[in-house]
Image (cartoon, rainbow, N blue to C red; front, top):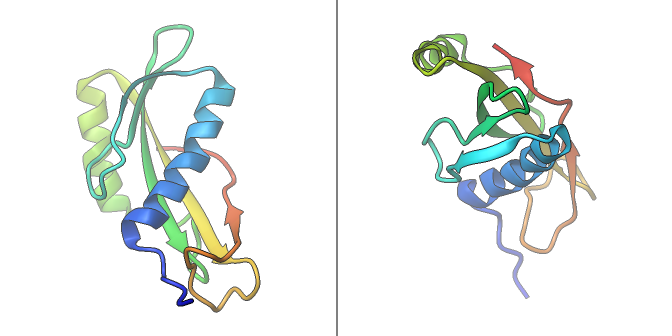
Length: 121
């Protein structure tokens, strides 16, 4: 049996699932979810005070640092969020092969998640 490496979209979906759990725990209501790569924001939510939140999700493979982000790109998204009176967050989700961090993630491999929560921009 060959082990197929996860595609960029599959890695993105893993990251989306991780962030979605965090948003549910916060009690935020989902207004829109966009799991398509390079379509931002991935989550549009409201909290109990009806404050709107935009969440940008990125899957980051080891050894890259999941808390690093493109400041210029995020500034563009922040300006977009302000037009909607929304707060904006970056959610970098680090992913690595559980057996060996240097190996790619495959459809049959276990994986480790490095996600320390939302970073407000």
